[in-house]
Image 1: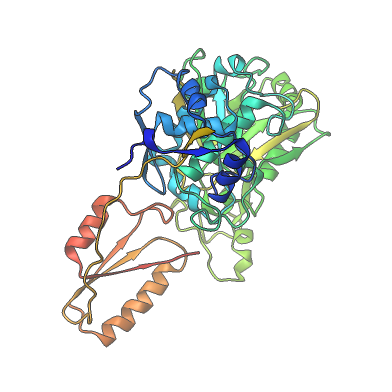
Image 2: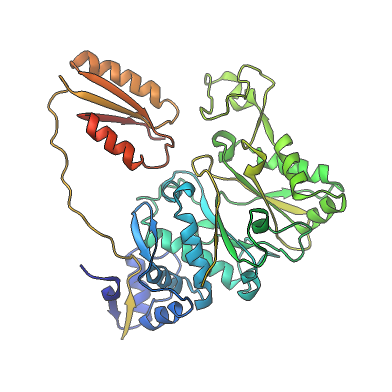
Length: 353
Length: 93
């Protein structure tokens, strides 16, 4: 059997290599950087790990992926060598069985793993957490997320229409990587909340739909802003509505300043949202038009016979994750709905060299 | 000339054979795996009813997957393979 070290191809030039990678469907639709030996060796020099070390078993192909395999896709994505530890940590996190990457890679739903970076590495690598945080223009965000997606395709085997059966996909399937703005946040960082030290750098993966805007230029108190957020969380078309699971809320700086000014903590926001991001049970069953269309996985204590019952968007307050990010101007926040209970939990890994 | 790596890793391959096909369910143990999706149980109950009318099935054993969007756990698959001659499962979207 050929080892990875032997699996190389020779081309006359970059153009020929780029076109060949397109023909093999080894790209996301954008041209890649040909993973030349010397580029991959340079990428590998950024980590203190054996290139043949198996990092994870990547579904749905169930392939054992090595540090070198990830480095190859990171070169293709345009990563700098110092980005590789973040990509590796993202792969480690996403391949934990509780995240159910197998399902996320194959589902008909519109979901993509969102990588959330915390800790000192954000500044070292200039991972954007401010203006246009979910958008284009920042090499680290663009290429780290892209490297992860290329791994999902080329290593995991998720090819659109073949194994990746997403009905629509979404732009986050090109790249989906953000940092939290810890410096300006009035609250403790996301990873510290989850039990890590502030000076640890971490990647968290969350199976997310595309970000949905929470536009609120009216409220000058936490109640109005959080009411808007709750309304967007309970959009009947998102997957949390019928599949429970976990959901992400990213509060923008202008909204956060108002909320914090009134003394609200992240937990105050979380509990308000848990209390108010609810849908009437009869609305969820289309007023009986299609019979008793229940979510079989709802807790026993939801009163199915009470037509006034209000169903929380997620089962517990702790299923609402809250970040601080975005530009300093603009009264917006963002909700990123999740895939549902079938990806039961986010996973956080420490980034190591 | 440039030399580049393939990005697809190294997949360990193993040849396996399909089980011998049954030509009857008479005297056989039928396993039914409900994947938990809406209507899967209704569909499987109906098919069980039809099959047990047509064939003299010796026993029907039911299982339910914990998550319809994850593969069945290895130990569940081994248990089913040990106890059953045939397996029926449902359902897609």
